[in-house]
Amino acid sequence: MSQDIEKSPLEKWIDAQKDNPDFAVALKKLVSYACAEWFRHENAIPVAPEEALSRVVACDLPDFPLGKWLDSPARFAPEIAEFCEKTKVLPLPDTLKGNFPTVLDLRGVKCPNNAARSRLVMSGLPEGASLDIYLDEGSPIENVPGALVADGHIVKKRQKKEGFWVISVVKRPVRV
Image (cartoon, rainbow, N blue to C red; front, top):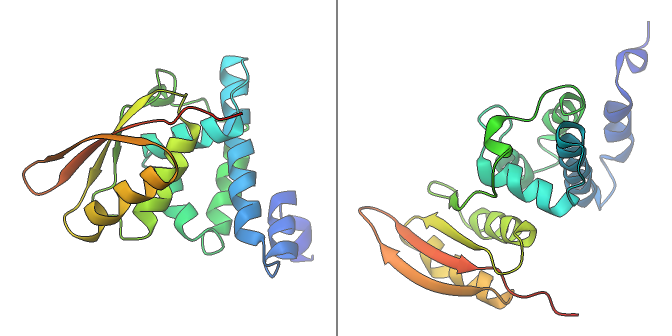
């Protein structure tokens, strides 16, 4: 029996696309639509793919570390495919049923992945919403606030805690 017969449609798609130069972008888009469908299935209300992905990454679900997977999407393609399949049947975790998370803990996430994750989460936040981001000393506190300001967000406060930093960021208004 051929192994292709045993593969899911997503696994076949991944095999066919893995050498595509836009593969990482396609995987991110795939995950965002799977997250949106997960919310829609559970809540029967639509959530934009960007917001759904942002919420799942911000909640940092132990079984589905999307932030880590999206740091190197091609490397984690099998896990991403499995996640996308599971969102069709798994109930939405309670942590995703409430309001948008107010904290994004990026301690231990290396540059430039911490800037990429903070940008991803900020992109899905509602306009004017605030997010506290926890960052390590050194490059993270030096680079992440600048990346967010470059995107038009407002860094309202930087506060040194014991061993890490907290920055409070407000989502930029959408320009039309």
